[in-house]
Image (cartoon, rainbow, N blue to C red; front, top):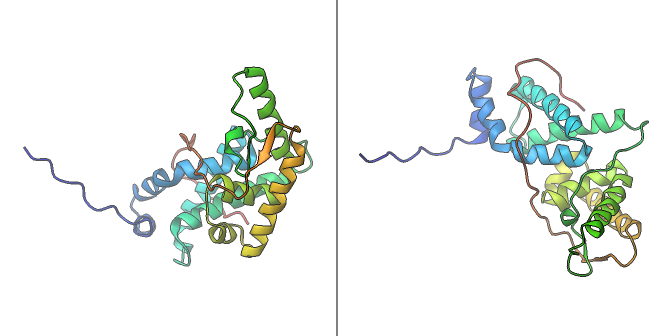
Length: 221
């Protein structure tokens, strides 16, 4: 028996419209499509899995509730990420008075900075290098760390990162440049060397510890 080919992929905007019209499955499918990247942005912005999960949960509740306000002025994925970014920024502002926890980046995820030699096989050296990187990233102000995450780690085009953050393209470029410049002198001398422009690597995602929202809420600004 010949198995029929799967039908064409429903566009994101159509899924969002179906959700607004009452389809109980549409929003869950939309989230599944984009959850890995949204989770990566939240985790790398906040550094703590629990905070990231809470921010993402808040963001998806907001998106669920405000779907009818989508006006097709940007891609649905850009709209979703903007809500995630706003939720993360809310948490960053609320935590501003507390000591910052190191942001849990892997050293290989820092474009513009690369090992000067082959990676050491000594676990102690590798751990020390990672600690240096985490502490350096945690020291960046949020207004520089988030553009760097979006552009250099997650691979968003500068123009899309500017749209997500509601900033001019030139501001995104300058903040990324300042962030990269700050990272290098904060790292242990002789361990790392700059490699130039950002690579735009796509960050790895993972399972997102939240369910399709069923509650209410308002969009973060």
